[in-house]
Length: 160
Image (cartoon, rainbow, N blue to C red; front, side, top):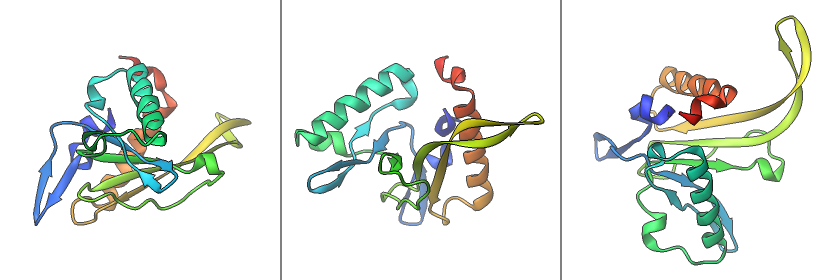
């Protein structure tokens, strides 16, 4: 949803030209015995959350079995990487060229937060966005992360 709204994050830098990509193909970094591999969920913006989850699980399974085709690991336009399962709270992900941005997801942990005028415990995750500054500036990146936060905090918006 956020990539559809702010297309510059779904772009590639080709030479000195910025190419906005029509398709939203999300790479998902997966650890395999040999290191990392990034299978791609194609047309993610046209899928429901359930379909994205199913596609991602199938790709991860195929990656761990070493059964991904070359088409399943090419054509990504934006990558998501998650080190939360290793207990890592924050990190700086590296951009997967020729993409212009990558989102890092840290672990989800219960933390005290202020809601209204009360302190309560809520699950909190850290997001890290690395981006090519030749294409995206810090203000755009901040607004993109702000939009992601709104979407995550209101997941029913993903059901439409």
